[in-house]
Image (cartoon, rainbow, N blue to C red):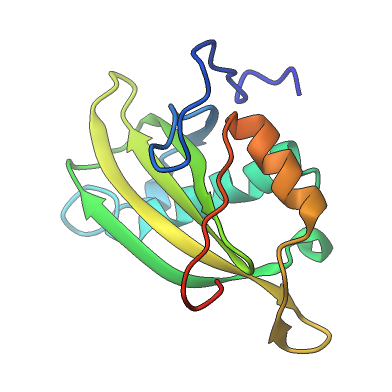
Length: 163
């Protein structure tokens, strides 16, 4: 994990209710095909950039690579647009896990321009999923431990629904 995308914070761990700084960063190039007729990236592209960053996080932080290693489904996505994403640009997608429930986890993200300007932000909720049984499953303790060790905080959250 010496990759420069993984950036350890030196500050004390944040409380579970207050996410710490973004520790995972993934570079993404804006591609010509990402543009819409208005000359900036189509509004769906931040989700594609996030997907690329999330796959890298799952590989580098959680230790699972490839399709067989992805054992979650997307339950909810929220995106807020702050600025135009233009071509060409080398963007920085920052990602953190801010909550881990019994069967789900929440991630927050930012997409920033080369000058640091915030272009898009949001959060996603993923549900752990057993594709063989076509059903949700509990968050494995080993994954929870790896994510919390990387993020530097206990991220456990109990909800009335047991998520």
